[in-house]
Length: 438
Image (cartoon, rainbow, N blue to C red; front, side, top):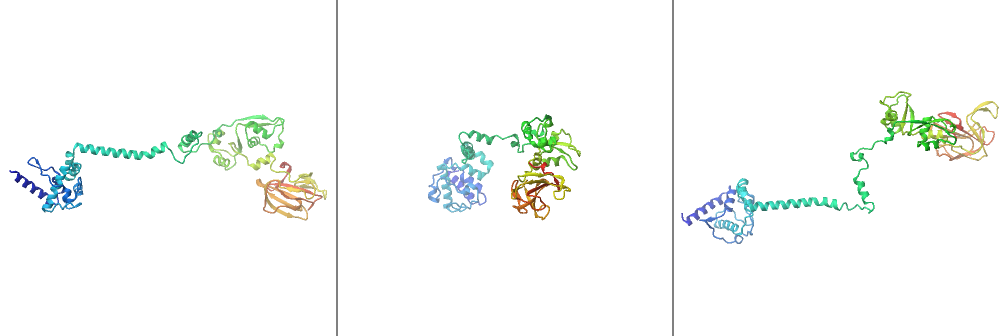
């Protein structure tokens, strides 16, 4: 077979491939395959860019993507056309590819034209090295960009934080070190261990010069605790030689009433059931009516404590004590009658003060009995009465503090001279004011 006949046969093969619209892969493979005739390279064709406007190294997108061959790109003639111009353009592109060494695209073109399996076998080692280098560079850039904010945070730190030189280490460690192990696990710290300490009691004999406040300071206890453990009703009646119980910790003694439970007692005094169990060495939460329990850390009602300390009430007026609480001869009739308060005499107009903080509950003027008088209601079920006044300085519903002026001494009502009749009422019953006045 002559060289001319061989060229004609090859030309007919290419024409059939170009005419096929349903075989893009076959066309791409034939288009990109090396061309030789009888062992010699094909004749150099004119530059493709001169005929079609293709730029060197440009590959039409339908060659790279394997789309339909009828698509045209940037002036590429329709490959199915049979005109000599079309065939010449294709030959120019193929020749241009071989001459300019556009082999970078050959693996991708072979992937499109022959499939992945056949293309892998024809990919050159140089192509694999180039692709591996590109992937490595991209991975390193991505790693560096993602790590940059973290590095800035560790090295530079937040811009808004300014640390003084001397306290820099302390500030840093305060953020790193938890205050206690409960901060780490996100739980609240338990009650102090002293609340679970077992109760121990010793005895002390009152010495000359001892006072309740002095004993409390000496043994590191509150006065509430000493009052509760020794059932003190009035500190002014404490006598030298008496023996007092001194516990090893603060708290109150509580006598169980009907309906009580450990949980209700603990809630009332602000402690825990376990603290009560441990302090009393109990193995069960069952309690009995009348049972005495030690409630660790409990405090007395302030009003009750002041009452025992003799600080709940103050004398309402300065003056001479003329008559006491209890049975006496009536100054008008001489008949024995009950006197429900005390009398303090002074000049008319002497200021009268509130003996205890409270609210003015009643103001009245009587022609007999108490004359002008005031009743003040206090906490703890107490009331105080001030009689035989000459003037009022307060009004009903007004709150008064201890020592506030509420009126002036007078001689109104059933009275034998200027004086103040003062009474204390506890839960509706008149009591001796001298047991409460300080």
